[in-house]
Image (cartoon, rainbow, N blue to C red; front, side, top):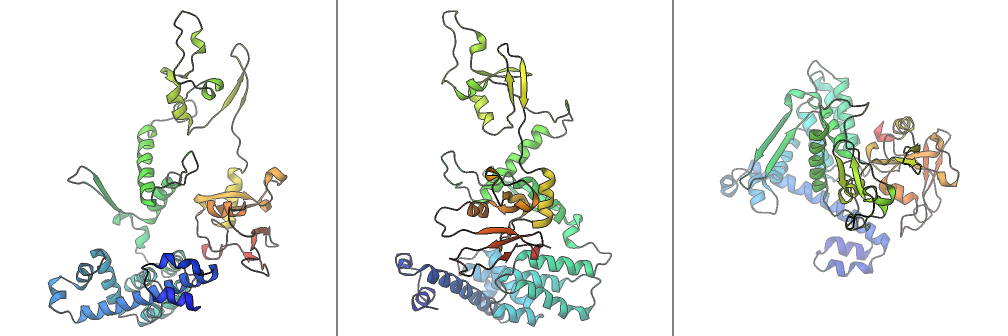
Length: 432
């Protein structure tokens, strides 16, 4: 580590922002990695110290009704976080292999919690002699910079299937499902739930498209936090259910709002509808929308609905009779997207864990340049990496994508990342 990077990691954060300009990009990256390793080291120390204190509590700890609550009262931690730290320390005692890997900073707090939870409640069909090998497999998935929670959970799920018994796995036990809804003193509502994996998958799938960051009309990034976007998406999900659920089928479609308006009126909206004051003009000239059931709708409300709608165009003659209808068209078909999900499992960019629902189908050779919409010219990318492929502003160099002889996408980094530009395989290893 360079001297400047070492000073950054070992020193105080007070006034640090004003000194970081002296570090190169490489030194900043080095400092970020070193600081992360230092956090893991200190976390392991805290867990060990708190656990020892729980075994030899003094009057202060006893008065706080537990070491977790004492820790929260004397730090900026919440009580639940203090109790989690104490719980992990106690859970690591019977499993020295997990504790050793955690203590050396090669396993995160969250991953250690997952592993000891499995070890404490292994599948009923798993013999005791299989535990050391299972721990080795879990630690392999949880260790190193390539470790992900998805990897650890996949190993746990695999072990549960290998040693499957008549008992339902916790992730599939619907009898454990709970949903608590309570009003607060200030009139708000608190919702807490615990669901099986399938119910959670359905909920996340339903919320996925409703929680995507939405830029403002001027391009300003969405300023809402992830929690606020989820809350807004949940509200919209409920509204749509109340609007549409159990309403049956009408004319081959679920009932929905149809609004008809002239394209000219929608594009050339005036502040107020024209009202003939002298008897001149025609009612048909008024810039209003029209609903099949309830008739007129103000153009202001029509334009509001038009901000997020499915738009179908109909070409009319001079008498208003339809000549032609042009439905919307999608470049990538539903069948192709299913095939892309089966191949790429989500964003294919190396190191990305974005799920399929949050990805775009990217044309390796753009369709505007004659690139066909076929599997060997398509790859799933999350929105961030999709922008990167289209030359994200400020990024030096350009990634390239090629379909290999294995019919899977390979990514070639720019020289600024790898001077030799060695191809990297798509990020599908841990998803299979």
